[in-house]
Length: 257
Image (cartoon, rainbow, N blue to C red; front, side):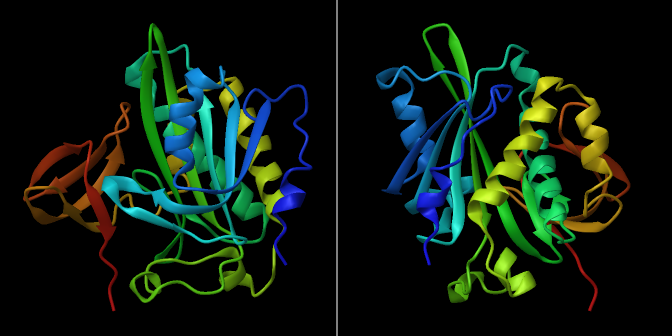
């Protein structure tokens, strides 16, 4: 049974900055694109959230499509207008991932975080996060897309080895409203006093540091070991005896067996 109508019953507490206005859609191409295009036309301000029951062309990293069928997931985008410098925008990415982690842990799962913006259960992704920036006049916004697989019971063949959901992990149907509310409580808590301490929290929940990895850039693919996350959000890796900072790449963990 589709519980999308129950999502619309969520009322944000007055203290919430993120979630002070909700906008619900049965089907959209991409909540990120719709939110970006709606900032001037709807006179949106920080805290607005667009939520769709279905995305027909949901956006993932590097131009990928995020599978977003109706009735089973949280497909949403949140609007931030941070007062700190652009060099610190990556903190919003980390904060969002940690908030998803905490909500899923509260649901009984054992999630882990993978750089730069994935939430994993074992070797499979359960949530992806996509940040996009937009400047209008002298105002700078960050649109944060979150795709969380909740009650997905099957995935296309191309995703079966790499994607999972709350339902597949627990064999139980979950209330999307409850998961959303839990997530928003946590992201509001972190955003209220966001600083670089969120990096330490991310490090304590990661699944990549000190592990052999494969780094894939536009130009090359090579083996490395992830050693740390830098203070600017870059992944520090060691390859061939040299340390390197990675800002944009696909990184996968090299599991044995």
